[in-house]
Length: 475
Image (tube, rainbow, N blue to C red; front, side):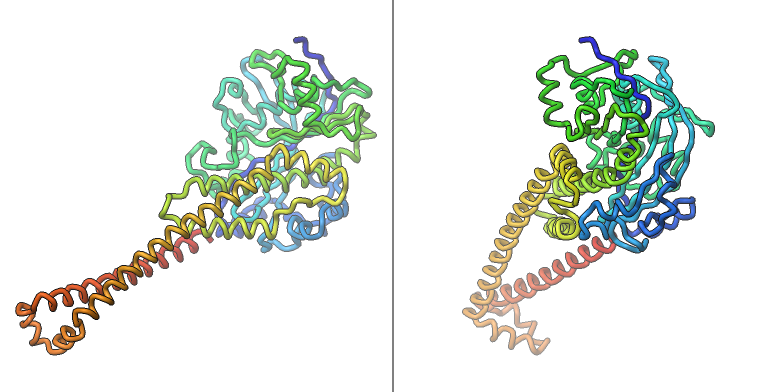
């Protein structure tokens, strides 16, 4: 299948990297970022409107009007000690190059700025803003750049062979570039279960960052379904450097585009949303695209951000309940139920966008992030776990009650009071050897009943202490 070329004159790209941190380190992370030159982002600080976006200006008032008030105050708090979303941003404007060894292709690009947003419940998102505006490139090259840039640690053949070159050093992976040169001070706070790997993070489905881009093609260039399909699939070039498309079936491509494309401004502009990227492409001139690019970096970015957070949170909950040791972690189930209840009540809303176009894009994000399915599945699974463990707990309680009742009845029948009366004088313990059969039964019943009560008290105390320590460590 011959691939139709398309010249891209400008490309603005944003990459989202989720991470986990300990909530007790939230203030420490904030202090470190401020000391390293990051700015705390607030809508009231209008001096930040043109600080991080290259030649674009993001009007903060538009951000404030884009979301419903019940979410706006959580996304854009005025104080750093807020428990919701706190964003720190820093401009870098650093020139670099991505070199592909096998195909000997180079892509010059600029890292404009980086955001570190501390989200609730120990989640966070690093946002890397880049652009390629120095010269025109074919669509295959832009998609190839996105494909390699979003890979944190190359493991597959089609991911290997990329190297980032900067004036301050060279890196063989995106992870190394971020945590060795741009934000090394953040690495000690990241929670990963394995070194040099992100497998401990449940919201990394394939250890790649989510990509968002705004591409400006040649004016009046024809944008065909093949181009849109490649955007959604991030189909760039093969390792040998040839243009690549992951389907040769025109019907499949057409159906894919129909489902994934937001075509409100067709045939000049489209937004393609998939599980790995959300990319806008237009054939209008740069002068006519300025406001759209501002939306891409402002309101549309936050639309993507909040839904990406929803996805992160739900995948995290799914991972945690999958790790529960059956029958032993009732307290963990209770904590997860408490967590999803807080998440649902304070942050999770079916509709968060005021404007019609924003709601349409949000529906695509919810669909391809499978947010509704994850939410329903998580709630139902946790409720099922809770009911099952409650039934087990009730059964154990009934069994203990039955045993204690038997002790009480037996002790009453066999005259335990007479035996205990004989224990008042320590010298009478010598008479134990002369007990009758019935007195022996009463004696054994008394001791075992007292012992069982002590064991139950100790077990309850230890369990309560463990839960207290667990909550303290978690917070």
